[in-house]
Image 1: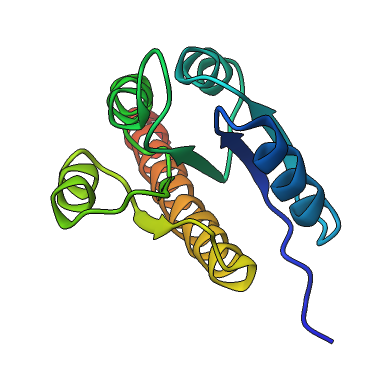
Image 2: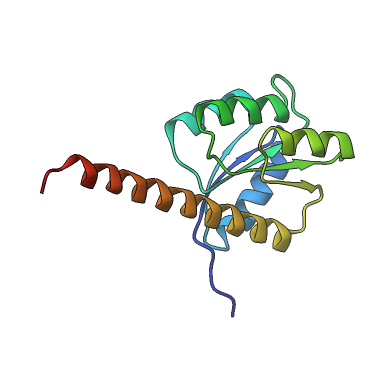
Length: 146
């Protein structure tokens, strides 16, 4: 049996049925999932809490996935964001990656692919957090006159 992925994920999609189904499937695999139905809610949620991965639908009413990506990255440049779309194009994928998306998957998403991408996002995030804590520790040690 494969090891359960322990990750905290924010799902962002305007399709309520898709959101509920995907949330349930991820939670059954041990992930802690928060779900919102708009880019505006995602930006607010990402400001209030830390996530190992944020999975954002590209096409949403209001602020779309690319604008959501920009706003989340403006607040938290280290956020790990995976874009989902039912209307994939090379141009939108390239744009998302330029804006800082870690990955870009097409709907209907294969759950094992998504789990792999979430695992990779969590790993990257943990490396960044570890590096930051080491830098902070070095600064503290340099500032002390032992």
